[in-house]
Length: 104
Image 1: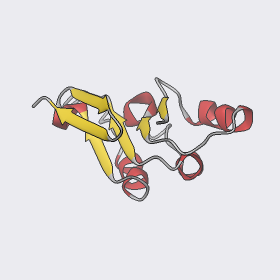
Image 2: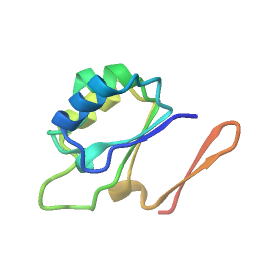
Image 3: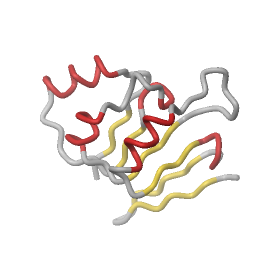
Image 4: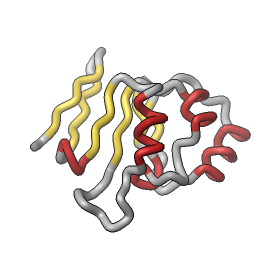
C-alpha cells in the first residue's frame, strides 16, 4: 500500500519530488495545498498514478479551493475524490483492501 501526503506542496515541490524519488504507483494521494491551482500538475498525477485522492479543504473557503482545474485533472486520473468540505472527516482503514468512511 502506497500513500503520498503532499501537505502544502505546490508544483515546484512536485517537480523536486519527481527528480529526487522514483515514485511508484500511489494508492492514495493527499492532494497538496488544499487543491490549489498551484498543485497537482498533470505531469505529477501521470507519474504517481493514484487511485484515490483526498483534499483537506474548508467549505466556502475564501480561496475557492479546490480549484476546478485540479478537480478536472484528478477526475481524469482517479476513481474517487474525497473532499473534507463535502465528505467531512475521512477515515481510511487499510486492511488488505482500502476502506473509506466519511463522517457527514
